[in-house]
Length: 131
Image (cartoon, rainbow, N blue to C red):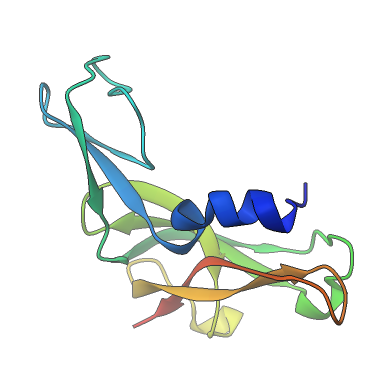
């Protein structure tokens, strides 16, 4: 689902940075901003911006094609354990498939996701690349 420029502008903070919710009651962390802890239900939470660095735990090659994305195939998607201890799923860029390995260090980078057309809005978001 493509967002309008106004909708994307309102959620840009969550598209351009990774936030971790830290619970003041149980001390556990969860990815993304949440109003309550998903583990204990407490509303005593604070938000911490992630450093964006982590370790690639697993990955896969993806051949699924969205509209106008055929030049990007295949893609590599991986599970990254961030230095804050939470896991996120994201696209791995800047590396060939035969160079990927579990345990490699990665960092979050801002990259292009899509565009409306050659002269339209360009959408950016977080992807991961090897350090």
